[in-house]
Length: 122
Image (cartoon, rainbow, N blue to C red):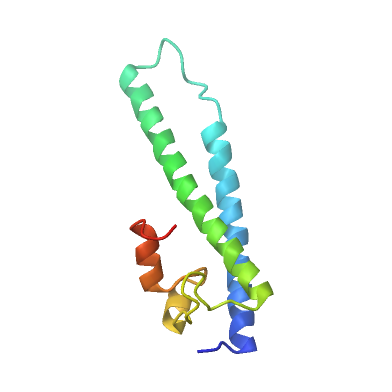
């Protein structure tokens, strides 16, 4: 299945919009994680400090997942420029349109993605 120029332009626009939104979100999250905690000190209860540390850890994990998605968006935009968008990076097969509509930054078929996630691909 080959994508039309109109479909590719639609996906490119969507991916660029996703990149802008995600970049803004990541900038805000990074500032929040890096922000020194003004309330730390001897007067703060240990449980409060533990909660703050837990919240910061969760923020870091979410941020790392968002960076991974941003990396995938960048790769999908590269594939558009290369003329290979919609083709699996691993198998060379066409990525089904419903998958691209659901996950515009998909660069692998579902089967290849599953193998990748299970560590079966290098």
